[in-house]
Length: 125
Image 1 (cartoon, rainbow, N blue to C red):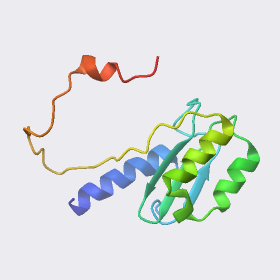
Image 2: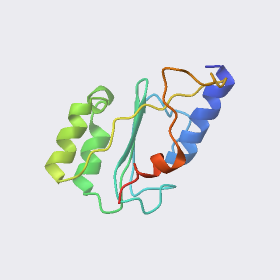
Image 3: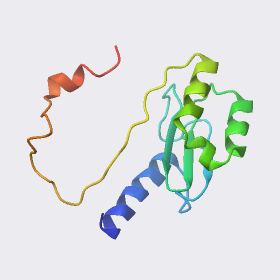
């Protein structure tokens, strides 16, 4: 990825999560959600050494404090989030990987095309 593309992607995440330039170097917890508004779930983003968590307004203050004090590497483990969700009766969606490309690679015979209608079937009811 070109440096300017990386900077644009980082700037978008900083804006969405409401954190400063240290975006990818520490653990931050925003409570309640900023730009995510009334989203009812937890939203977790990580890259390199940083982990950034946006908590819903109904999040327990002890959960928020505990996550803010947790080491980044622990929070980058899917097993941690499976246990976190299970203890609270939450549904875990993810992890997912977001990748950024500077150039459209075009169609690939190894990748199936998906229509808009098929994608809408993935949305929760």
